[in-house]
Image 1 (tube, rainbow, N blue to C red):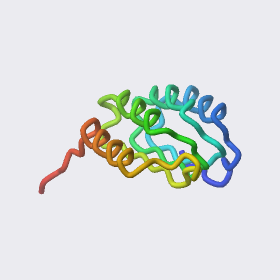
Image 2 (cartoon, rainbow, N blue to C red):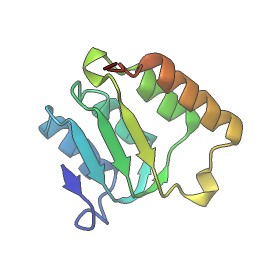
Image 3 (cartoon, rainbow, N blue to C red):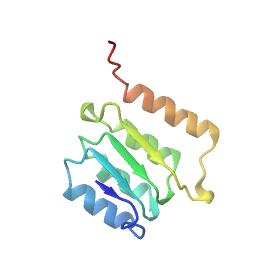
Image 4 (cartoon, rainbow, N blue to C red):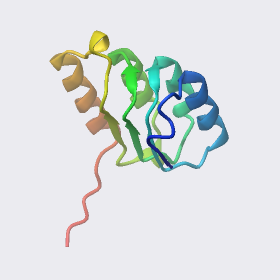
Length: 115
């Protein structure tokens, strides 16, 4: 589901409602405004989600992202999370970004196909 441009003013409530309504999503790309950690509980219920891209002004915390990653299940293998427009007041430190990357690598390993 690619909602760029038409979702510029989506907020937490809209993201949460979509997550509850579209439980079989595998790819979700959205923009939005002031998206916070409040979305993670509903988004974590998307057990087939493999890619989540935010071109939204986000206000995520390291704790919120890590809690979300720790709730990913087997259906979320090879999961990719892209946050491309974080609010500058909510920038994650290099250490937090490293911790998120390492946790994601441990929780959602890539299964390489050797030929």
